[in-house]
Length: 116
Length: 114
Image (tube, rainbow over all chains, first blue to last red; front, side, top):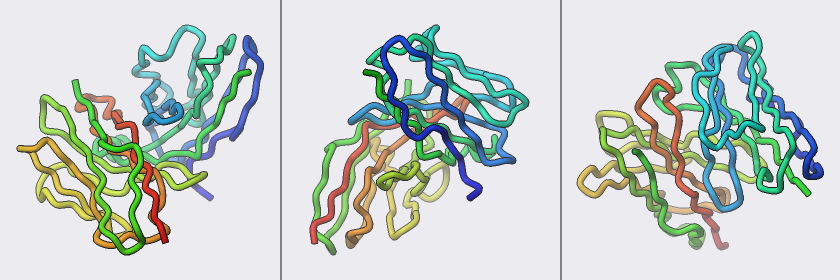
């Protein structure tokens, strides 16, 4: 399967713990986006990368959140000192820049976070 | 600022009936509009898109949508629903800057009754 891969698919953690999610995009894709989806809502933009450069961060991304994309390949999203409000599905999407221009993003299946 | 509004969080139709999912947008510039579908336990996938040109766009699985500037709408239709169409559908508008990020509506869950 050469689609976007996200791990872990499910994570249950206690409030205050740190969690990290990984996204492996489609290999030739230079754009990578992170979105967050809560119950009953559509995906909300968190941040995006062009190759290894993080070009924009949403105001939703508090100081407890950090994302990286070393060498422009896989990406990680880390949440420190988790809070119950962080419970959500975290979605990763990738594309070529030209595809992103026309809205064609390729999404992974998501990583569901539950904070107890 | 750009936004989309999807009317109806749940739509239920009988198999074989017309599917109509509503989306209205707000944009200060000519919008690029999209419909994405999310089947259970799968990632979102692009169903169809409007960028420029023909205002009636066709997508996968027999879906189509019409861009109506005067009504600021981009409703999704399918003449005859199939059980396999049961999914959540999201309308989205593209942020017309270098990020090209998508701004999604809250989604409509389509239920298809046998």
